[in-house]
Image (cartoon, rainbow, N blue to C red; front, side, top):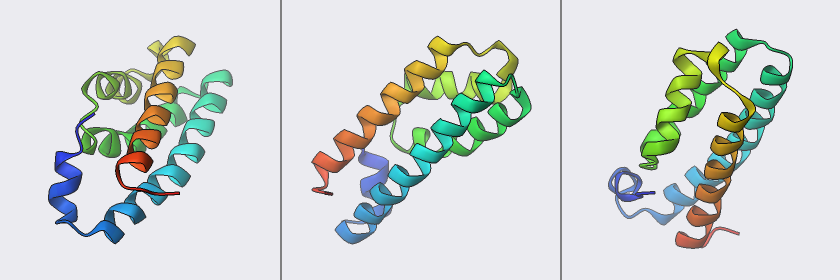
Length: 106
């Protein structure tokens, strides 16, 4: 994880960054749950669209390995397996914990 881009666009505005973290938390939870449902239902079109929604945030947080998985989900959703999704969920949740810790978000 690399928060340098977030710090740059936040320009030291802690309130902006805390709002980003809060938004990431709520959007992340919803998107990841919908991705699980889509994978379970084999709705690959929706899975790809959800990955596309998640991609900019993952990229903004400098999560290169996770970005590769999310890009695969976006570009080739029918090739995604449960292990891929579990990896993204874990890394996204780890990022949320790291963000909350870094920026003192409760």
